[in-house]
Amino acid sequence: KSKMKGEVVLLFVVVLAHIGSFVCVQAAPLTIQVEPKSTECFYHRAQPQDSLNLEFVVTRGGLLDVTLKVTAPSGNVLHSELHFFSNGDEQLLKFDTTENGIYAFCFDNEMSRWTAKVVNFEITSASEREADIDAPIPETLKPLERSIRSMKAELRRIIKEQRYLRTREQTHRDTQESTFVRVYWFSTLESVVLVALGVFQIYFVRKWFDTKGSLV
Image (cartoon, rainbow, N blue to C red; front, side, top):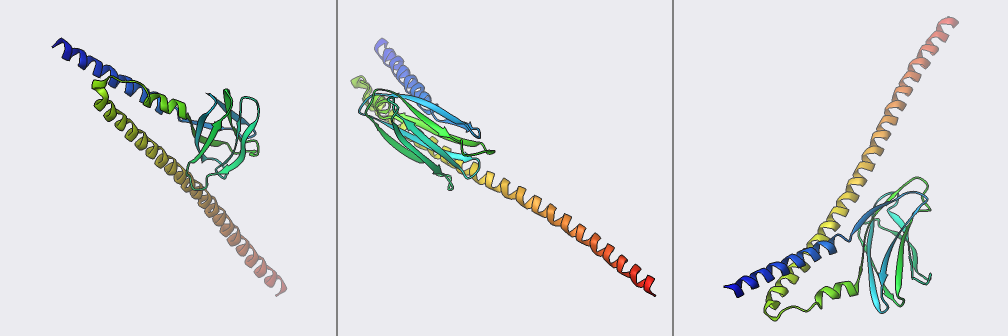
């Protein structure tokens, strides 16, 4: 009984550890607002011969565009380009690291004068993903470990799909609200023009009859 109890406790600890690691991994995605004429930078430490993945999308602001600049620890610029997200789809960029140190990921909104950009992004490295997979486990827990890892992978896929759908929903909602505002102001302008035209016609007709009466 004591042996069975010990296995149950060990199983419980392993499950809690995997749930905790999953929560930590899924807390990585961030949503930031880059104000006009400003740049927001984030940093990630990496070892040589590693691989950094950046998934990002602009969900709100202007033309859904932002300039991304990636800099190595030595100061070399690995990537500098203006990205557009008109369809609301995430873009995935991969960078092979050759230096040991901190890599900078900067979102540049200096070109915009009035519009802030909302950016959703996630930075991951191959070494961090492999560390969890290569962790040694007791022989008796391998079948359970495989099941838990399969659940983790499925949950990651579901959360990523939900994040994608949420991003698309927000993009479509912003488009709908923008269209509504434009239609509202166009309708208001049209009403003002019609009222002004009616007042002008009344004034012109009355003026015309007053002129005819004075001539008679």
